[in-house]
Length: 470
Ligand code: ATP
Image 1: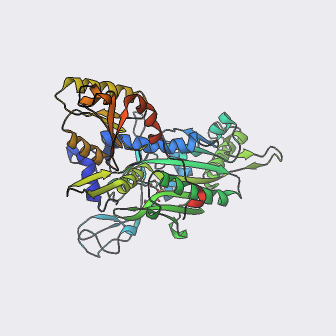
Image 2: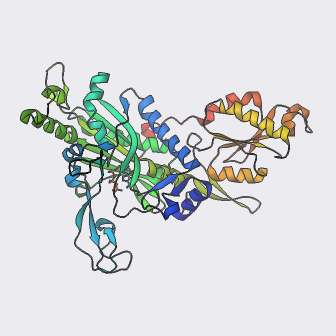
């Protein structure tokens, strides 16, 4: 069912306007991609589904949108300056560079085993802030959205009067100077993340970690990823990031292999603790005007005992780009039709489909059909389902094929019967609705469309935890 090769997806994405290589006009900028007219819809729909499930449908998560430009001290005290690096090797023969843990002792380009010793390469992008570019004026482009959440922990806590456990959710860009970006949008240098930092009492972290792994597996299945293509895999101790006590990766069967889609880490009290310690140092040495110690501490107070505790953090961190790639992989299918024809179809769940409905006048050279299609389009747009497209450019067979290929769940056709001037006057004010997956067509009165459609586009509710393996 799913896509067998990355090439199929890359080609579909370029041809139909989902994803283009970044700066392509000037030869491309490696590790960057631009999302086209359909890609931006798919990506926005994925992010909206995540936000809805995590912020709107729960009682214990607040949203945030923090700055991308980040003070260097934030990323010093988070440990990223010293440890956010990958091991890099150079091939002495052909001068190419590789991530040491991604190759098996030989240069993938020329096959030589004459490689340098691995050395750490820090992945953070620096930029200068303000008109004077000196050693003191640089800032980082954030390498993860998480730090924006940690440094706002106290702000959100004070503004919302939250008690543990509660979380902060954020969707946004992050930047990593990957040594070898590759596999289309799987490993890029400008990426987008959907992250939750979920704050819990120390001691309750392991239970919450397990709970979040189950929750996230269920969520990806509700977006249409098959359970067989998802694996929850604990990381080995050697692979753990500097802040993590335990991490479970959710792997997806991408065209290039079973690889990480999301990581769910138990970040302990590492980040809040580290930022708190530095704040305390600042107030002691008074190098800058300190906050009062109690307010600067990124901690919560137990009202009964008066004790302060630095919360532990469970972090489900998903890549938006990898999510889009997984959805495309899962949805893509080449089908043999009864008459010997073939079709490409993208079986995206309707709530994720870039175009929700196409409205097609049966003949484009008949103004009365086109006018009616335009009016129906306007009515359907008023339902607020998402993008509704008037398709008056080609013949109807071509329109169906195009909309199958880009995943439009339903095509609504306006014909002479709709206008009451066809062979069957009793069909006046009815339309044909064609289902993308079954290719079946039903005749529906226009007056019923408004109640027939919306339920079909609702994001599915999560399956019960018991039904999910992993
Ligand atoms: P990897 O081991 O693949 O480099 P990671 O373990 O460094 O990934 P995390 O730091 O856990 O990744 O980031 C959380 C999520 O952000 C990942 O699960 C992934 O979906 C996404 N992500 C991280 N790096 C990239 C990248 N270079 N391109 C696209 N998505 C990324």
